[in-house]
Length: 146
Image (tube, rainbow, N blue to C red; front, side):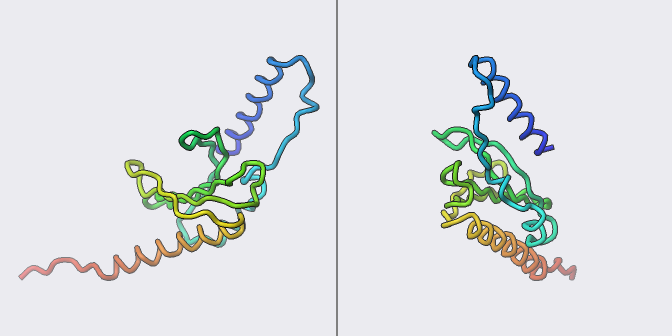
């Protein structure tokens, strides 16, 4: 679904550009985005069970639209968002954000020096959540009727 969204968005942009200019789109240069350079299957193998990877187009306050990579916990919807600092440099510095629930505000966690470092941090956050959740479950005991 997300891949189709990306191709639909590119198609829409091309049509709008085509209508607004009389020149050919042959001169339009395509640039790789974060989702073009990330091997989603490799990242998926590094994540704990129950996580999915999506691409999305978002707008951060006061900025233009940006393509981001999202890691989402299927159990509770917790999101880790990776956004390149410079859209034209998807392997350069990347900002990490987390969102615990739809009613919470997105929290900026850090700016990693590179996409590889950001992916490592995101996998660590996902793994820490998994361990935290399993510790909380093992510590919980049902009330005893007396």
